[in-house]
Image 1 (tube, rainbow, N blue to C red):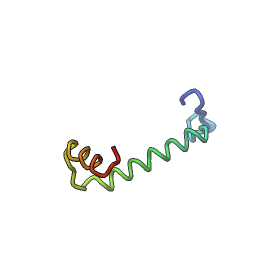
Image 2 (cartoon, rainbow, N blue to C red):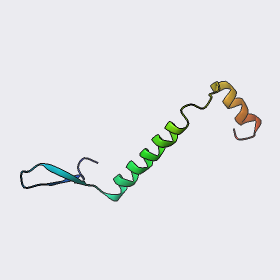
Image 3 (cartoon, one colour):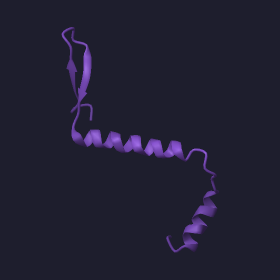
Image 4 (cartoon, one colour):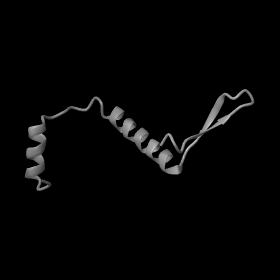
Length: 62
C-alpha cells in the first residue's frame, strides 16, 4: 500500500493530507468497524474453545 499512497503538502513542504486508493480506504474502514465490534463485545462472557467447537458440531455447523 505504501507505494500507492500520496501526500499533499503545504507551502513549507509539511504533509497535510493523504491520498490513497479506494481499496485501501475501504480496507481501513473495514478494520475500523472490526475494532469497534471487538470493543463493544469486550465485556461479554467467553467460553472455552472445546465448548465452542462442540456447540458448532451439535448445531450441525461443523
